[in-house]
Amino acid sequence: MASDTHVLDRPPEGANADWTIPQGWDAYSAEDHATWDTLYARQMKLLPGRASDAFLRGLDALKLSESGIPDFEELSDRLEALTGWRVVAVPGLVPDDVFFTHMANRRFVAGNFIRRPDQLDYLQEPDVFHDVFGHVPMLADPVFADYLAAYGRGGLRALELGSLKQLARLYWYTVEFGLVQEGDDLRIYGAGIVSSASETRFSLDDPSPNRIMLDLARVMRTDYRIDDFQQTYFVIPSFDELLRLTVETDFAPVYEAIRDQREIAVDEILPEDVVLTEGTQDYARSKA
Image 1 (cartoon, rainbow, N blue to C red):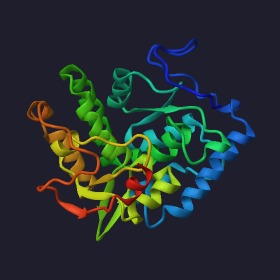
Image 2: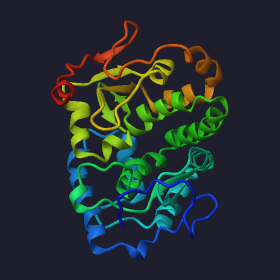
Image 3: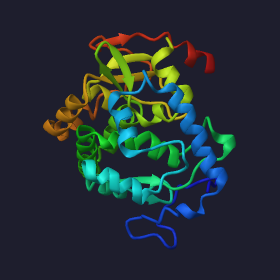
């Protein structure tokens, strides 16, 4: 099911106007299902005690398991009953307006291809394991499900305001690579972490990265890594607080206030930061 690239500039032949396509579940090979099973089993050895309670509850509620790639229709029926969301297949990365429109209407777009067995540890673009295992369990949580729908509406507005770059950083540091406080511990909920064995360990256990409490304007000014582990992770106190921040904030003045401010480097700590861990940055320096 995998190919070298799934980045397209227009809907492929046979796709709907909204870029959705049939999942094509019957076309998955035994190797495709075995790849899912291998990835699932590996993550489930790591995630208890590391993943957020909301993520683990979502896995259970949606009946995701080590039994092959899920059928999106069956998965969507369970998810819709919980939070009103459905999973829709797309041929790859879709245009921003398409992405946000689906999200605002509680449709989560997921690639229908899966990585090759020799790509278990790194993939340039999200596949069905990242999208479904990494993202969808959090959509079974009502609070997080509301956050992502609000983000979709905010994304459409950000396009109008020319501020997509700033809003995209919030997505990156929450939905993809977010940490949350649970009691005295930090837990992972970002899909880019929970779907990666190596970043699952690195994000919580390694002394290299900074771990800083999330501030909206600060995050929107902060660059991020797309090619390796993050040098800074942002921590939310709760999903309720993340939702409150999103729905109660008028983002337009925030965009305007930070528009001419300098960008913050991926490893930088500011005097006003609430720092939980000041990282050594040894890993990043070793790769420089």
